Image 1 (cartoon, rainbow, N blue to C red):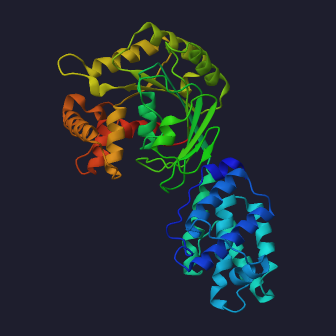
Image 2: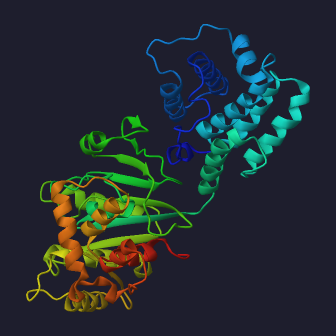
Length: 431
């Protein structure tokens, strides 16, 4: 187990079987869980996970438990007087596993539980532990444990997947932050025109949606809100974990690596920092974002040449972004794609992968599809872009992944704005 296993794990407590029991029993349960974690050494991340349980189980400030550990274990684990509560020890084991994501600690917790239960119960706790550690959900087991067991299995199986690392580079105002938010399907990085990125930011996907964004800066929060994500100081290493709203589930764990804009007029060191990261970081794909409205500038040509000379061509995927800004009669998408392809061939790219895209419309499309409230301005923009991409001259699926009339509207529009093809390139198939 690494601390990252906890950071990228998901946890939903809204249907926890202890949520609606009597307050005293909830408190007793919490203190037993706390006792088990502290017994084996509790990490900083585990403390934050435990805090989520505390908020659910101990709802009144100052509510305290004065019973001895013997009284608590008798009430929650051994249940000698109320055998129907035998399932509590399975809940404890599941919660312990969800908090630690550490199989060795789980094995130790099983042995600790045996100190408090009767010998005839050993076989059942061993059987349950085998289910947990082999990551299987048995429908014949106690129904009240299935939700917790299923969550642990999803997390454990997810963490066994190979990680695909995608590093993102661009000049200022190419829409890098908007594209990252579109890939995640929610706002996790700032998108203002000011210099947002002064360090490196790792954005990890989580196994399932639990409604929480994890943020690690100099501080750690497992429930970052809009204010947290908009106001932390950039610089150094930042980590974010959130469920990615992908069009199709990926066989990989994904890590997006956000780097500083290379042509910052405010901080010239950002270009050097970004290139150091590109040279030193481990990644599978370099996602290079081009602003379709600023092709051919000296700054763009300079960075393209640097990337061509230092990064393997077969690792690079180009995104031609902001095609939603093109105007009929003034701009031509087909000629722009052809032009950038010729420019890249002159730099040595024999078969460059170019994904035409409107990152902003893709972002709005995902928010709308997942039922998030759009602002009045976003609603107007969503409606305007929807009409625009219905027109053949703006339909980006013509250059990548054809849209079919019998497909879901969300999929059709994702193809027409280019997001479907980009995700297929990034997430689909072996690299």
